[in-house]
Length: 377
Image (tube, rainbow, N blue to C red):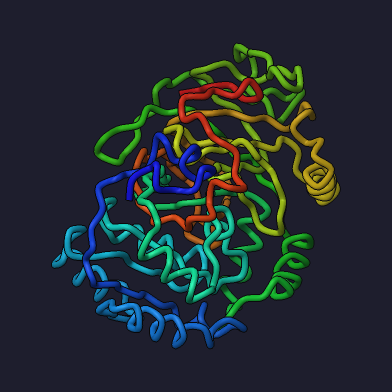
């Protein structure tokens, strides 16, 4: 499929990312998550498989990711039309982590939030999915690396990661939004908001990160969330003083975005781009139940980006550490504890996009550097 054959909206949106080299390979792999598929859309899985087979594809469905990877590696991108992760964001992340970047994915969203799927317009609709497998253009996007693990939407440490950990410890089957009520209340009662040390680092091709600077870090007694004597620059949107390039600082909550998506419809960083080779980092300086409620209200009102205790940075890699136990989560799944090394992986993932994408999304310039954030690395 050539760009001129696409609808006008998607042709403009994908001008720099679409791959016009296509394949008519008949094999489609479906990787389903038993937990994610147990919700209200679980009945759509048999309909999807039937629709794919009716369209003439040789369909292989497996619950084990390793089996899917084995078949995908044997066939390669030339012999494989697409891999369909059927589940939520966590399922897509796990499948993408195991597969080469050249294997195209077509998500079939069966999770709770389905952030990546909603952003690109994928739906749990067998008919639309078959159309995407057949005609969807190939789209290469960035991903993130967190201590060597892949993430596609976002990574965070702080209050929300504590909530995700609580859900992880008590999860039984499919998660609904109401399932988060108890973990949230537990975190409100128990979470102490320890300080998180953030430092820009230099990305490495080997997947590990080395600090780009190693300045002495001295906590300022007058402000426990700011380094003492650190050079500062001005956040162009809020006017706040923030640490300059090559310095580190403290916060209570840190969120790194590859896509401009967050659970519950919250728009914490609406300018995050999956094609700019950078991660968008938002840090919140204050830590308390009251400040969390204030931040959430500010996000809903769209005013948080102008607050002096909310900082926004754009960088290729970061190192987050803490002297206390701080959990982190990737794409809504509890993954571990700090230290956390984050790095952008340009062009790490290939999707087949629905033909409707681009008609409702703005054109993004991959080379942009928004004035609202400080480019750190």
